[in-house]
Length: 397
Image (tube, rainbow, N blue to C red; front, side, top):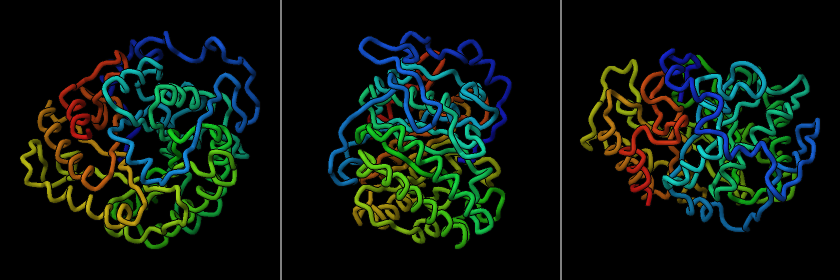
């Protein structure tokens, strides 16, 4: 989704009291619990602090079988993917509170079993593309909140479009930086079990181009293919559990449009899947600048959702390549939660029929701010709208 970095003043005011300690910090794993080592962090990005490390099994099962275990997902959006500023304080830069264990527990307790953690890496690297250790530690700490809860966790590379430009002019340097980043991330998390998933790219595109959201050019799509391939090769080369870890590739701009879907290169690897974004139909889910807009959902546009799911099923799922819709959602339009719940029930129903789990895009904003996709109040570990959240869980069962 095209996320704007400006945040309305009211959004900051709503959450200001809890910006730094969302839902309290009583379970913040920055303090070492009993039985854990308190080893020092390495100065190199690839080596984890001992108290942050986790281990687990990566089962030698089909990628489609692993994805079939997933039901309902939720995004920790506009937190670790904030790209303003430097250092760990960027997490709260767009008005959301610091992520805590209690916050993630609340998502789990609602019934979600997948958490996607979008992360911006590009403003946390030096001239050699070495990731700042404090930042990598903080990302790992948040990953552990979800991993320790038994959830499937997707680590994503997000909001990198300022440097990650998929065209022939930039691709060599882009590939070099992207490979360097993923090598460090893969090394840091190589011992984790198969509940941890890596997603290499988020909406890779040339910003401001005429084809930005229309499937891209042939040149752009081939550059994305190259980045997908480098991502897989880099992670696999780190060995250990990463040899069989589920890796998510994507299309140009993570698009569900036929042009992007049908032209993407498929890598021969038994443990890959595709990440796709589908805010369908746009007139209901978002719609600024559109010539028409939907506030109510009566099912007359179900066909648009069904077309997307059938396209993804025929291209990927029917060929043994699982798909996860890692972003979908509908903005709050004057409190139309009941209508959003009806839309989500239809949406998830079609996706489930195609064997595709979905991960709701939650940017934390429900009352005010840019793009009101928020359904979870991170400051109080409660739900802005149980109506929508419960509909997502019920439809996915």
